[in-house]
Length: 152
Image 1 (spheres, helix red, strand yellow):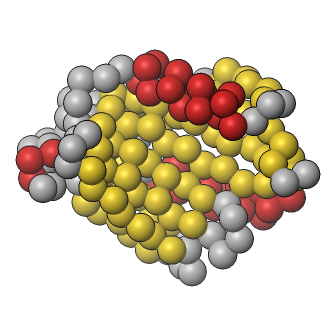
Image 2 (tube, one colour):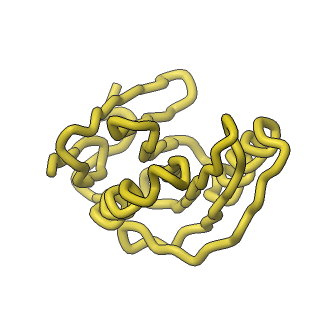
């Protein structure tokens, strides 16, 4: 396992998975993603602007609705990093494959976060445990990190 520990968060991710980071200074957003060798991925977006988890989840859901005609949406009860999340599980068809996506959003003292992990149902038979392990390892540090200004 590898450890990511920056921007006031940490998580572990599997060996062989590719990590990428993107900082958007204009919109006060940091995005960190890890990708399997296939198409499964896990991404966390940190927003250093005043926005609610519900607004972020609604925006994400709207993007899925615009992209996929057939979208099944299920509410979920989830905690990440000890924080209660607003959460949705989604199912949709893409390239004739059934896909599942898992959206989770929560707020800390420093930022609002959205976690999305996704894969085809066939891939998820073996990558879902890794994706959920990444989520389970997520930790948030509300102190010792001054927020977005430390990043840019």
